[in-house]
Amino acid sequence: MNFNPCLLIPIYNHKDSIRSTVERLAGHCLPILIVDDGSDEATKHTLAMIALDYSVVRLLGLPQNSGKGAAVMHGMREARKAGFSHALQIDADGQHDSADIPRFLESGEAKPDAVICGKPIFDASVPKGRLYGRYITHFWIRIETLSYAIGDSMCGFRLYPLASVCALIGRVQLPKRMDFDPAILVRLSWSGAKFENIPTRVVYPINGLSHFNMLQDNFLITKMHTSLTCGMLLRLPMLIWRKFIPSGESGTHWSKLAERGSGVGVRIVFLCYRLLGERAARLLLLPIVGYFFLTGSKSRSASLAYLHRLNAHRAAIGEATLSTPGWRESFQHMQAFAQSALDKLTAWMGGFDSHRVDFPDRVELDRLISSGRGAVLIGSHLGNVEMTRALATTERRAIINAVVYTKHAQRFNQILTQANPSFSANLIQVSHFGPETAIMLKGKIDRGELLVIVGDRTPPTEGGSSRRSSGVDFLGKKAQFGHGPLILASLLDCPVYLFFCLREGERYRVYLEPFAERVVLPRAERQERLQVYLEQYARRLEAHCLKAPFQWFNFYDFWRQDSSTAVSRLQA
Image (tube, rainbow, N blue to C red; front, side, top):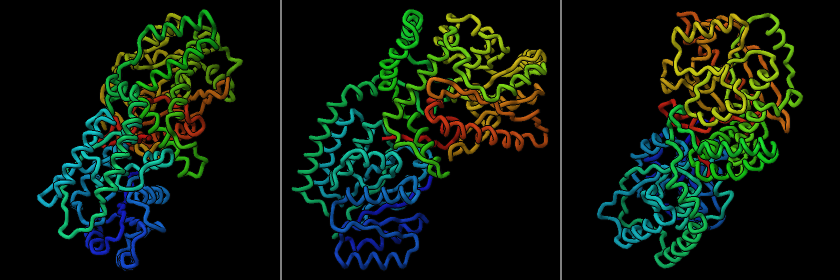
């Protein structure tokens, strides 16, 4: 989903300041959603006149005064329904500096899953009681989140990613009055959200109208902190895990991500399978997946980002959406990955025969093999292409070479080699393509062998630079896809197929789709042709992701890690 922000103003009886606030905001050419929290008739009349004068203004309303939090939540739900991706909340009384709006939007577009919070720079107009009260709230927020990430939890100038926030407000009961602003940030922090803090000037206008009730609102805020502190204690193990167990850096190229876990854990699963069989090994996966789910905040966030993006794309093209992705769906996603790894092990040990695989396009493969011609099969991290290579090898159907980068998965690959030495026989480790590599691969093609290479990762040596990758629309947003498989196919001058192997229940289904008889990249049109081929590949990968949503196993920030604009999404 594209970055599509709007402005959101909750209002209660600010008839004297709202017009000047809208005048300043209108210059930013953004839709303005004003949520009337049961204001008096004079304010309603003022708002009606403003809506007539400014086409960018849309009026929303609550039937009676319900509190600032209720107004903001109502506005965010309506903004989400209207197709906006982000809502920039700003107060109606003119406290906030509208000149900083571009800074908020720039940060939001660069990091669309983060909550962009204003960090006030006060002048002499700030009431001392309000200022000192903030310090107390800051103290409790840091305890409740075990973090300094939230610079100021009381400032109502902030940019929300609507997907994750609306999922949160639909799942938990949040305060509806002045205690809403800090409470929602703590809840988002617990869910793994990231925060950016932007220093911004905040003034308290002379004779300005404030609805902060010193007695009532301080009581509500105290009650809120008591509740959140209890919630923090319940979540303490998770918060400690997240804080002290590293799980990779956001935006890090996939090839730089370290293999998590230990060889001991992998060997335990291997021995369990060998001694007790597949069913026992599958049961053993549950606590292992649970551990990595709880400790792998970056992988979990990447999973949720992908599932949210997939859901949004389903809605955009008119397909039925999944249930709102949350931790349960992310756990299911990681569990599918673990099951895929176990299936690879099972296949290489001879426990998964071809009778459990449906291959409607087998005639196409048989025709290719009988012709004696080699071919390039472009796969992906969707499903289980490696399992198909295992079946082809163990049943001697064809020689399938996997062109891979294996540095980040050495422990698991060692286990597969131990299970069957043939695993590494046709595993071609490539970190860059030189003349020697091209000659060696050309020899395999000439002998009628098949080369499998994945197309949904950028080259490890370049980090996805513009010379080696291109941006292509994938699930509604630009993502970088590497040129390598296509350039390799053009050099080898052979047929190219797309190759997917998806788990369907207890069986697998293999899809072999003709892609190009030859990949032709004329020097004068090289970039344009690459773009066309990549778009064709991305469309087919997208179609199969919609078919098997939990089987795409790129657990890192796929949309951000190779581009200058970050586009991952986080779920509450």
